[in-house]
Image (cartoon, rainbow, N blue to C red; front, top):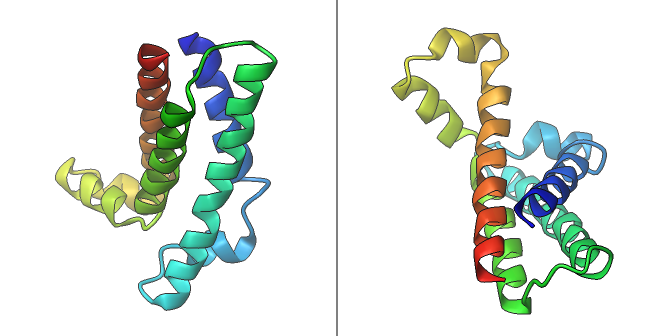
Length: 132
């Protein structure tokens, strides 16, 4: 069950982060102003919606038992953590602590960002597996 959940959560993440994210959201979601928050808070629900579709697929097509409350908590958790990670300061902070400033200046932040999102999906898939 874990593998199926993780693959579908990851596919939903990729869809929400790339083809379903607007250029405006990608460019401004970390801006430290009201417009940045609006872009960020427009992008995060896209993750909730695509994840909801993935969970519907898991429960109907694959017939895996996922309760409504665990599914709702997963949606809130994924959208919420995605919004925080996408503000970019957590990634920048981590890269400073890990002494990765040169890598950050050469495109490494995008990899650390995606790794953080994937770790959230792993934890979510594990939680859904253990609560079902």
